[in-house]
Image (tube, rainbow, N blue to C red; front, side, top):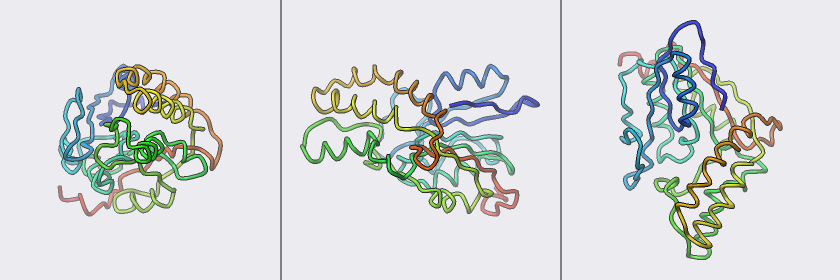
Length: 230
């Protein structure tokens, strides 16, 4: 993930699902950044996160942020429309939302969470992954889906496809080894730093419509009536 907020003034940024090293890089540029983790459902247990309120009640006053990064977690929340509505609420008019979601397409079968779920359901063995505890699986979005999701609050977004599934394939292999074959959650977690580095590499690879991830940028509309009076 490459983040270069405008250097002309200090921004207030809300980061959801963003890696700690990226947060540190933003702070070094002089911007103020808050972190948040979306609650994945009533049974969610997101240990070690600053707060885990329901997705429908994010912390932060209305119109209090210049930019929101929503990285990966939208695809796993129970109510993605509520998440987008909250992003619009906390953004100032004209503020920018940047999100990454799994894209629908030929390589969607590489999804480590969905493939693992099918394996687990078919064999009735393996541990329950915390990442998809709320919804049970991970959504994949078409560009039209994103247009429909953002339309109530945001101007038409720009979208680009990135990635060939390097991190997804690696996470699937880890899950088969350490969540299904020989359950060792600690070993699965030890592989995550490498998975995150592969994600960074994936974000740099453009393969047109075959890209596994959609990276989307949109501005909150100045005339967003749903939140104008808040």
